[in-house]
Image (cartoon, rainbow over all chains, first blue to last red; front, side, top):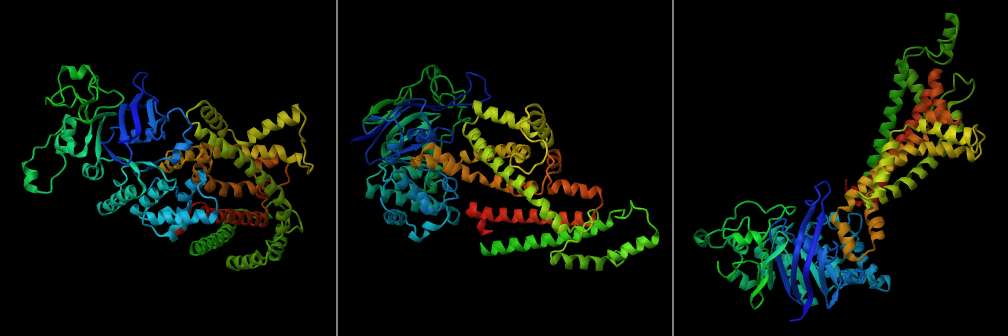
Length: 321
Length: 304
């Protein structure tokens, strides 16, 4: 398969004011490398504070990366003006209540992107395009003159999607696009995203903490923990054979439909909390909570190794435990 | 929007009625009388009271006053014999209004960009400098600053006129001293409001669309930060238009503010009442305008 994006050693550090020098560097994303293939959906999961959103935003240079490279279609985009790439890469935000300018009509929110990239030559052309986009996401074209506050959460997220689609992108980062919505609405949006992907040949990076949603939509899944990718594999493979102890703990938390199965299965409960990213543990970032941690885990950072045809794990004892 | 508008207008009319009533009865509760300082026999005093209708019951006086007011008659000044209160306001108000208008324009055109620039450069040198100076200068009263200007430009440099000659040059120093505090205040308001807006997701959305940083800041962020500034500017306009006593006195501006304070010390009741009602109405009107501007600036407010 053809690679659309190659991310290598991507870093994003935030400097926190008021902390002591040497301890003021919040390592939200630390040395993350992965590829995204054309037309696929890569899921990115992890608990709150694991750096999923930061990774997604840094990928589009909504945050300036602190290090590493992002190769898009063969070109490194970390050092060039980003504006032309805004047409190719788009972002769907998590919170549809916050991501739309309350002072602009829906038509203008969608149309602004068209104006910026000069995609339409005439006014009639522009409004026709906006209508088409709104219909594409299941909204009424007459709703273009309304303001965001007149819509429900699900409708707002549709507006957010129409806005992202306005520039005809190739790649979209979906940052927990359904986690702010009701479960019944979640399914609608997910199905719509899948249909749009088929119709327009889109590539998704799908960020979520809901493992069931990610399992449904993604071909491959990456698991993040404290700014690192700890495991990356095809969806089926990851669910059938999780190799990293953190992935195992995550997967064991998914409830089963059958209560009997639920009773019988063994949940792995992790001790403690995710460490403070200002003072990450030495060695493997998961070593403080890992039930299998040995001495080497506290000394050396495990590299992300490819164990078998694309199944990558960052664990010193992968395959042994 | 129409319902909202009608509601606001009715509220404003009610406020004016309460204002007129309260002013009238409060004035009558104040001890002393306009004839207190003049020596006169009881007979003369009774005649004077009869002439001005002060012997009638209070409610009758009130009704007469309101009736006159509706016909645009606020009575005549007791101090300046024969001058109508309306005439005095017509003569004095333009000076104060002109000063106020210039001061507001100056305050907005300096304060808003300065606040926006500070917010965009949050925690950088320029932001710190702006914050330092606004914090220091916000605590300097306008008349202190005015005196300083007067000393520097009139006494030492001798480039500004020290007496009122009705020339445009006369407006420069008073306008600067009047706008001084509002500039600092608007800068701080704009900065804090803008900082909040810049943290919003829809600003990220605007960046993601590929909009230039300048447009993101001034089209998306600044407009959304306008509400606190607008709500401050309404009452500020009324306050500055009505003239500020200290600055008008300092620069010998023949404005309403100075005249108003003089009328209080002279116990010129019709003038006090007339000016109070006039300025009160001005304040109510400004707030009404602000309410409508809200509706225009923020579409969410229309629904209320």
